[in-house]
Length: 228
Image (cartoon, rainbow, N blue to C red; front, side, top):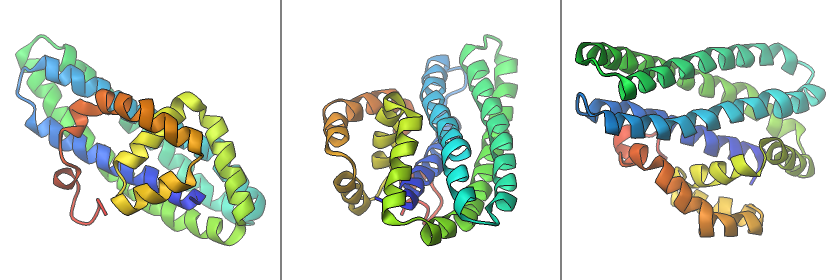
């Protein structure tokens, strides 16, 4: 599994989870605060995974490319600006989910729901623009400047930066959103102890944590072609 394949898997999972959130919010019954709390908790994990991915890019991947690609520094400014905007958009969505889950005044809950749907749609649009831009600006330099050995070393550095606790969520996240053929490829390329931990523990724990969001079929949540 190359660094590009890893990024593609994470990007697919991000797109899918935000699409799931939009669909799930549309299905929530007004006043069902228990369901809103469950969605808030589940999307909290997605938000943490997105922010961790951005940190790995800013602190590990971008410096790697900057050392090897002369003009990359001029490209990275836009990507880091995107991360600032996305962090703010994620914070608005998390705050809206918290208010929807904890609010006790029906009129305020209705207004919160409307704003939350708007904020989630804006987050989705920002993410799509950013992920498309990132693929355009970042994937070609990785392909041209990183040898297989360097790519493997970078993957190890990214995993070390994330830490085992975060990896224990990232691997099931990526696998849960990957087509079957890519699941096989990821499993064959990942270190055997991580695959074993995934199968014995991480997969079930991920499923429990994300159940309120993952009840929506990904193909029902994503636009045509985005789930492939």
